[in-house]
Length: 306
Image (cartoon, rainbow, N blue to C red; front, side):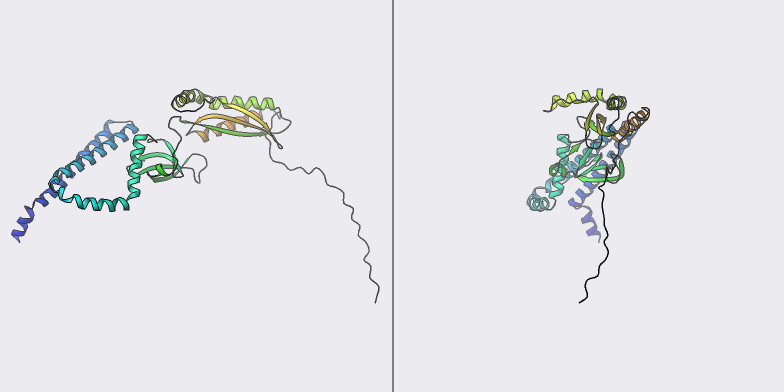
């Protein structure tokens, strides 16, 4: 028993395994120490997140390097076995490898960053974490109207960047064009209605125009895209039921719903002040007339008896 214990304790392979475990433990302690230091010293959340991710990544690299150094004299004997096993693993884990490649593409191609609002795999939300295999989103929409959070945290495989379009709401141009449509009754003062709408959208969304103009200028310089009006505008169109006014404006991608609420509230208040000169239209059904029906009921006659 003692000889077996001595042989086990002085086995070189056992010693290397112990050395590898101790090295990994030391690296884990150092990484944890730096994580706590970063949390105390760096107050900006985005910078703190990126530094913590960098420390974790460096810790993984150092751990792999130490294990390679410890077992360096035995790696040559395992080359053939690793080659055969690697082919099988590559086939079985092709989705994992695609996700890893997606992470590299996201990091180098700047598809999106932490805090961006994106749509991946048909799911829209804010990117709150970008891992090696998955991107974590705080989901928006679904049973909640507009672009508000619904409370679900969704993890999407990074491989989706190769399979489906990646929609980024806040990359080079962190604004969205939005529109509201207001139906106005025929007979209303359409000139006054247009002036009211233009005045309201200028007051509520006009401040975004200056910032959007600078951001859009950068987009025009970077991409092959035509220049576009970012100042609020109102257009009018007549249909069979009412005069339809459409207000188009630029808004921050996270304030679309609240801005629309402010605009509609101001419009209703301003229309009420016109004392009936401008009125909101609604769908109505009017019966113009019906033709007269002349119905004659004759006597019921009995046929001749046979």
